[in-house]
Image (cartoon, rainbow, N blue to C red; front, side, top):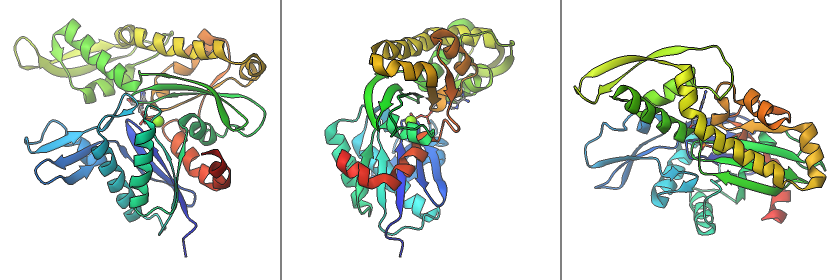
Length: 333
Ligand code: ADP
Ligand code: MG
């Protein structure tokens, strides 16, 4: 009865999402998996697995199998994908043998892409299609990708920043920087250790980034109290950190993001440059939610810069919507 249903999957380095046209996003969880290494049994995925990080006995491994835009552990990635599909079905996706469109990190090799296709097929998919991330992000952000108007998409994810220029439904040029939101968290951990002799974990750094982190532009100063372990005494200690400090500490990484976008603009075929100057750049991915990002890039690049309607979901939505044009994709891949 539901044999024509299709689902879209965004297998991101930080988050994995599943989308269906009728139900929207039916699963959105961190790309984390917990496995019992003795029995190879999957114990948890997503938020549940993330909550186990750093708290498990040696027989349990909690891992993020996708890192820096590549598949770091293939077996765990497939196990994650399979569990996600089972969970999505439980969450109410009314499908039996769906067609699946999946977006994998750009750094995945062709062998890995084929193997992911196989894994999804094994989970009961009828047909599996891979889609390029910038195209999925552009569809999700409602850009007119099949028209003769060039669009530029900048996707700042967990492990990478991807820049793509799209015209007539295909990628004209693209660039990948192996730096995304995760690197910013690491910079914050490093800064707090260097300047306050305090050790904080990644989740704390992430909170600092989201609350008071900002792009290198003028914003009212904010501050927050953070607690970590004093390196000297070994005891918990709290300090107040300001947004000015965090801005300084993120500066260098963000300049790399800027340089990558600038280079893509410079490499843009002249016939398309006019469209980009007029239509501007669409920003997507969780990293684009950093305060001031949109304004800062607009000031630096002198082209319009707009945030996608739901930056954390654009790729998943685009992947799901692409299922409506499967006939086009068959010709494509
Ligand atoms: P991926 O596609 O690699 O899975 P996402 O697009 O899901 O990545 O983005 C995840 C990244 O976005 C993480 O590094 C996270 O810290 C960052 N992020 C999420 N929300 C915010 C926010 N409000 N401010 C800054 N960074 C954010
Ligand atoms: Mg992504």
